[in-house]
Length: 224
Image (cartoon, rainbow, N blue to C red; front, side):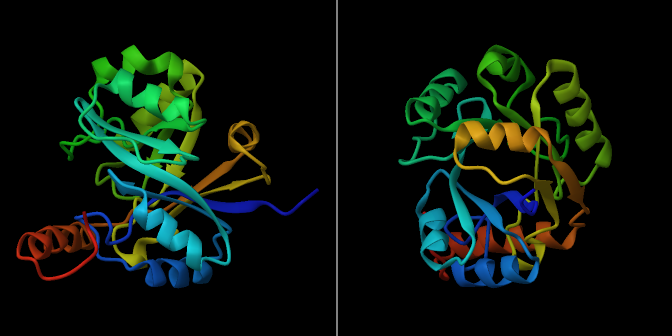
């Protein structure tokens, strides 16, 4: 049997407006965390994922955390960016049309304004491939627990990620899972995975606030 992969399925670089991590920092931290696969999921672009892919000695899944009209949806295994602002249904359709997989991140996080609305989640449920059941940035662990219960109830493949916006967070959550070749293989392997995670705490949220302020002041970063 091949060695298990250590996979973090949700992270950002400074190509997201609320993140400060450079692609180089992400790669260095991922290597130290012994990650073998990273899904880089910038807000509304795939430029950061492409930048990391050019540098990384490990496998990079091109992903995007898309702001739909009713909350965030992640597309994985993308070739092209998915436009923001579309309905959840059209967002899912755009992901699927390029052979991507659909993940709903932090679905029940009560401390954020960005989660996909529950009514929208129920509408797109037949096309959801996986649900993020552990997000290290969730401040209330019961919100992660609710996501895990929902995934089990509806037969969704559970996913996990650090949601890192600052390089020390990379690897805070990962899935230990078998090797895979493509999207179909990936889902089967992910279903066999074991989630390992630890909460990020409050400090990274302050870092994200600073990143947003820095962007508004035009003080640097590659965010779009």
